[in-house]
Amino acid sequence: MHRALRGMKDSLPNDSTLWQSLEGSAIDIFHKYGYREIRTPILEEKDLFVKSIGGETDIVTKEMFSFLDRGERDVVLRPEGTAPIVRAYLEANLHKIEPFQKFYYIGPMFRAERPQAGRLRQFHQIGAEVIGSHSPAVDAEIILLLSSILDKTGIRDYKIKLNNLGCHNDKIRLSKILKEYFLDKKSILCEDCNNRMDKNPMRILDCKKDGCRNITKGALKSADFLCDGCKNHFSGVKEYLKKTPAGIKCSEDPYIVRGLDYYTSTVFEVSHPALGAQDAVGAGGRYDNLVKDMGGPSIGAVGFALGIERMLIASAKDCGVLTGLYPPIEVYIATIGEASRKEAFRILNELRSEGIVSDINYEGASLKSQMRDANKLKARFTLIMGDDELGKSEVVLKNMRNTEQHTIPFDNLIAKIKEKLKTYSL
Image 1 (cartoon, one colour):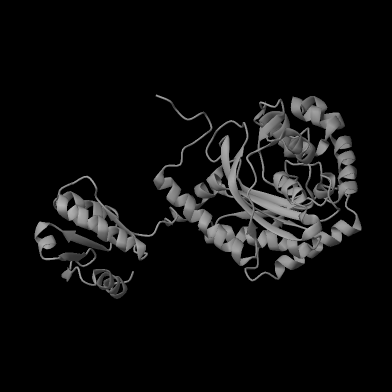
Image 2 (cartoon, one colour; image 1 turned 90 degrees about the vertical axis):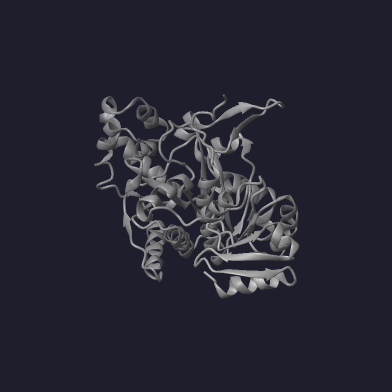
């Protein structure tokens, strides 16, 4: 018997109901905020991610699924969504046609991490990107948008942590400060962090090993590396966040640096206690240099990504389970005999064509078994039809909530069912 690969997981119908509910809620929020969907391929050139997210990041050095395709091109399964969206934005010349764009996306990403709860090798993200603005109001909107999605999906016990990485020159100054701080601590840093010391000291702050995390705690206590422009931008972000109707509460954390090199200025993470030590539900921030670095104009951009698997864990902790997206069965047809099944099939498709959610048993099960199915599907009404009813050109319609039964002739049957559904609306 074949099994799914390690770190890859099937989503069966009961699970998919929850996924669709969560995704549907997110899409509803996106549309209210004026965001439009973008879909990019899951297969991209490796160089896209090496140059955008950083050649020394853990994603590039350890986690990407990369291989040579038939054309001997070095390709990868996309590990994150931002770089492909910027690539698509530039390839479609949107920077020349309509520079300001608000995108959202939903789809699978791939990283060769050690599988654990909420952290699979094929995982799924809901995300948003705004390209074409440096305004701190856009940072605030992105954070509010993320918060609104979490609220809509029943996630409550989350925390948003903010930081300001500054511009490119500020990050250079920060790297120098960190290199000096860690210089006499190289012997107690892990091997990876020793490598990061020379290539990108900021990555040390993102190390997940306890020993290195303890060492980094004093690294930024007196670090002053931000220029006035970046300080003013971050102050603006916080001012705009105070203007939100929900009064979003964010705490500042100077150790939020994110694992991708393209981030500048505002960065943030959302954590939830249900996820344990690796408690991030989602994260995001500004990447004001990425569009230019990929061959486009110098324009601002900001975005976020939420992990769907992690959201489901957090939602289960806060509110049990999500309400399924699938609409309840309105009419279940139970039949007795082959002739009635054929006529029921005609009625079934007429009901569906009228937008009435309907189903039927195709296997010739007993009436008792079919009524159990109707209950299991939480059907509002069951339409019962056997040879006697067929001979009289009528059906029995049973209200599954109060067990009332009515005999209804074939003539104007659909109209009568609609009337009953309206009378006994949920």
